[in-house]
Amino acid sequence: MPRKKLALAYITNGGARTAALKKRLPGLLKKAQELAVLCDVPGCAVLYAPGQSEPVVWPSPEVAMSLLRKINNNPHRRSQLPADKG
Image (cartoon, rainbow, N blue to C red; front, side):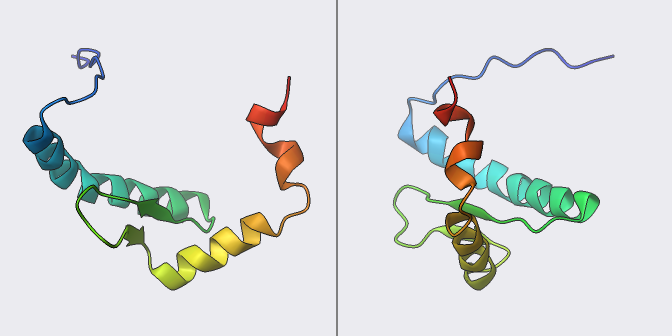
């Protein structure tokens, strides 16, 4: 039996929002890792959690910085963004 469609909404309660982030963060990082492995592409995830001074970075800050530099140095980057079209 298929799951019922979940209505996504902003969690207004700060404690519940923090608990949801802590619960979902490992799953999100696992999905990022699975996507990178299954598609054989480099990938990274950078998440800024409220109340933390440092971001959560997967797989490592060095790899993430390397990939972000590569994206920023791509001369065709601006012309490929969907927000720039139209």
